[in-house]
Image (cartoon, rainbow, N blue to C red; front, top):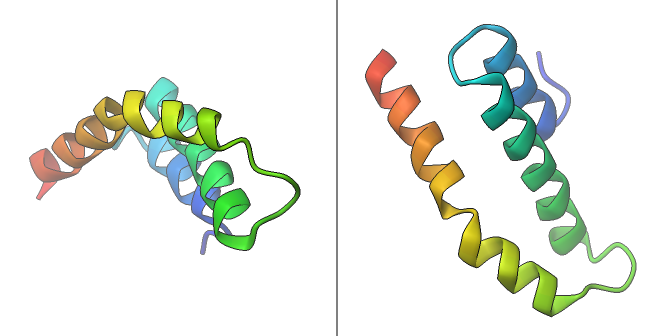
Length: 70
């Protein structure tokens, strides 16, 4: 059983459910989610906005890959 959100994405990549490169980016996004959710350290809101505004393709790609397997 995965112990973190990032590990879920890494395992999906290892099993070929999503691409390895996409899995790595989504695992990194999970780390950002933890930073925001738990307010670890000082947050750079401009960077968070930039990531949120430019990484939606990763979310759409992962949803598409999972939908194909359903």
